[in-house]
Length: 351
Image 1: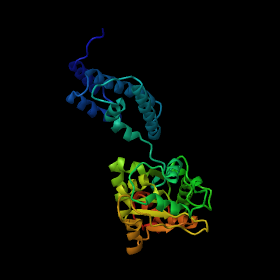
Image 2 (image 1 turned 180 degrees about the horizontal axis):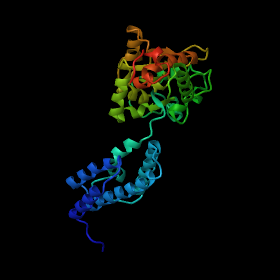
Image 3 (image 1 turned 60 degrees about the vertical axis):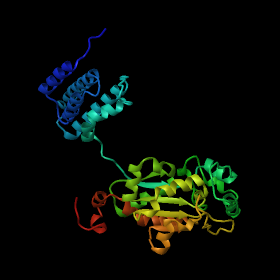
Image 4 (image 1 turned 90 degrees about the vertical axis):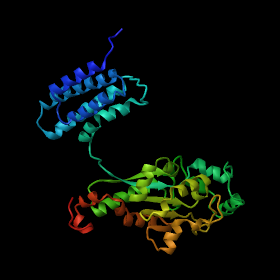
């Protein structure tokens, strides 16, 4: 039977580690370990394991930096040490009663170190919310087999609307919302279109980092209030599909987000074309209410406020112009400043 490890053993081991010294920035893990010892929230065996792990990492990093004096190489070396230690720890099968995930403990101890050696994000993510059906949801809507309460005549109203659509409208929806094809005249899905246009925005404005779409599905919006509040404050694109808004679950999730009520939100409302190739901007009822869809904040912003960030459209050319014009509003200020064209975009300010 292995000897029992006591907190006295842990404190002696920790004092020896401090006395021997730890390379910067690995020394950023000293204070978190000290806090673990002070709180005694976890077992002494667990904390002693972290002391041992930090000592091993320090030795491995020391060996690496003796072979090079270049700061960039040192950071890369330490990044490898941290990554290897993290992989070893996750595979060590620790079981701690009060912790559901060993990864959380590792992050607590080594977060200061990981931040020091983290690679800079090579891209700028532009948030794009998609109130859009999957093909499965589209088939549910088409069949009328949706097991949620809806206003009287809702299914009949949709069937009347559906009769105006092209017979093959279901083909525009895919396994994921990102695979939705919003324009009959284009074979590209929404992910292709956003990726293409953000690349053109980068080239046009001279941003150093690539711009990439970061898609957020409408059903996920209300599961994480931190993200939702960020989007409300800082802005995002909402690409709103007229047909998808007939699906009760899509409409409810989108309305609960209240995104269209925030002036920083940039909203496209993309209408399908009918059999005569005319846009269908329907006034479907809001689920469980007597109001019409036109009572949403989107329409008040577009019509009453003449807010240019809200627009009905049905042509891909309009969509591309909209992305080109409004994407700069979603770029973090420091990335605008770092652009070679900064003086022509936002003046001569520097970071």
